Amino acid sequence: MPYIQFNNTGAIISTTEYTTSLDEIEITQEQRALVDENRNKFMVKDALLVDISQTPDYLARKLEEAKEAKLAENKQKRDARLIGGVDYEGVLFDSDTDSKINISIQLSEMNDTDTVVWKGMNNDRVLFTKQDFVNLAGLLKKLTVDIWGDGGLDDQYTKAISDAQTLSKLEEIEIDYSKI
View 1 (cartoon, helix red, strand yellow):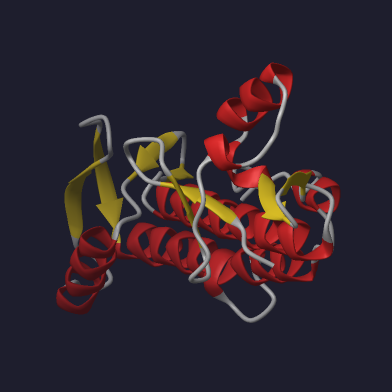
View 2 (cartoon, one colour):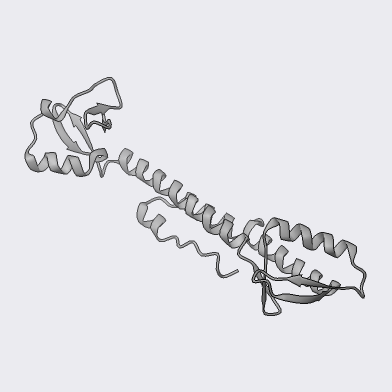
């Protein structure tokens, strides 16, 4: 069953060795306009133009394409949340990898009575004790585990996307990392 594919000049090329152009089959002007608007939804079978948009193969291909797009959306939103910061004592602090490393280094070099001025994401200056760094590190760890941990949001969204059997079920998946 040759699927119609079009090259950049508008000529039809099928996925098999069979090739044709719209001029070689009989179709109405309305059909030609429909094909022009929906080029990947048709095939030629027995010199007739056939709408394949509801065939299992076409729907499976569209579902896989939509899943890839939904996974890309998940990755973008997940990564944005990972670096979106955490709130500690009313100040938003960086949550990217560099910040986690810097906090870890700072913690390892402090004794229990030291204080350090630390800056938040918006350049807010805050006097931190060692315990403040421990608390902030705990929030950063929680954020990371809530997203990346076994059963975390990334796992949940990835599984839901993978398990979706129809485009409508896939479209129902709302990816939202703002709750953590």
